[in-house]
Length: 95
Image 1: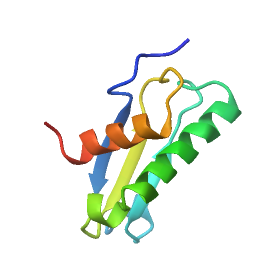
Image 2: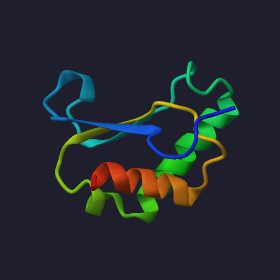
Image 3: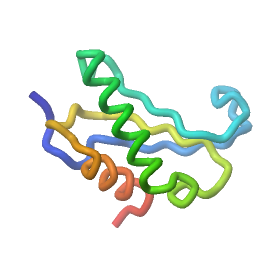
């Protein structure tokens, strides 16, 4: 099934000097197989998150030169582009 929408995505911020980041700023998206079993669903979530970042203009959301790790914590129930935008907005500007 899946979790209700909201709080299904987490954000970690790292310095580009961290050896795990490869020395370049950027955004990395992780959808674990334990959370979302089917590859087609994992790929769909990654596409939604990337499109939400493009639509919201990622440099505006994440302006500084850091490494951002977005990770899906729970499988959301049928998320759409607007749901992904809201979730990323909540992470970028918590209330």
